[in-house]
Image (cartoon, rainbow, N blue to C red; front, side, top):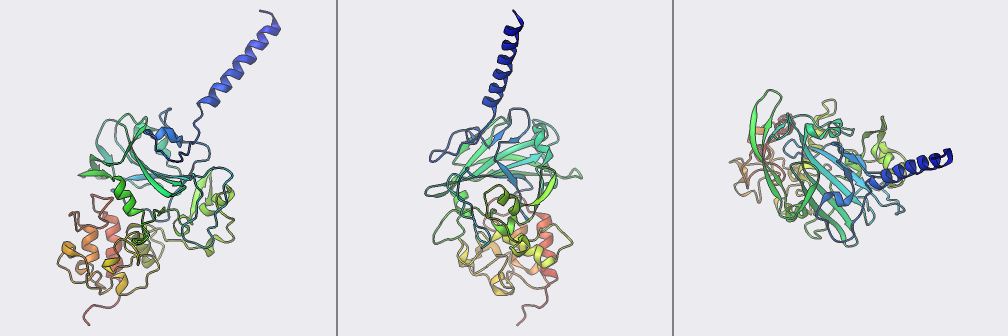
Length: 380
């Protein structure tokens, strides 16, 4: 082979290699109607190399105070189609994201070794993409839930990960996975990890009981208004999404609502407790929510008084009172129905009624401290 032919052959090999790499690159596919049987068909992630890697344009985010789900860690992402209208968030509320948007939440646990049902109780790293996702041998992927914006509105779609952690399979009926939670001291607690069915997903994501319109719950300014590490630098999430052409420019993030981080001891106890109740309870317990008959409003802006539960007699608690008279008794958490319902794991009594099989001891301790430090009583 002469020198010219050899050079041409080498160039051909290089180009073919580049073409192969481009062909192997995972790209997002937004399905307009049907839901594919495999999560991989959405192209949000690539797990082929033993790590969970995000596709181009799939942006991770987290919340000031996240929802508790039996100590599961969560990877939240959002993908918005290119060349779609910019969304205004300066007015607050739920951003009107364009058709084709895909929001994902992947639930997983750290594990001590592959092939075990033991999952480790540990803190979910906030404000960053969890380095543990770079080694799937150290975690157990449970499920990935999607919210897809279609022409008719938002639609929930759920996938359960296979044991090999190579893909996740579409489910409408949910699933149950027996697990054992192991805390740092070695204490063990068996529980059933429950993947919700499609009706349960719909119920939680319809915070207005009249319209029953499905909405994202976490993708709101008050939950997103916080820093997140992108390319090694902390950036306000709302400002970063504006840089990506998804949200309108943020004139002043400090002027927008921001829930407290309930784990931040430097913040006022009242703000932390209200943020915890807001994310865990207010999708049902709001003035127009599915639990409106309870008369309990646990949104972050609800006034401190009977609507929030202070000295409020139960209206529709059924057997869920624990023999206690008021939702909140100032200074007396052990006399408060709210504490009983957060602590118990009895079906029909525990709150939230979906999404947990365990009691969140740290969250309960926060609400207990908040009630214990309230002034007043319910004697009059």
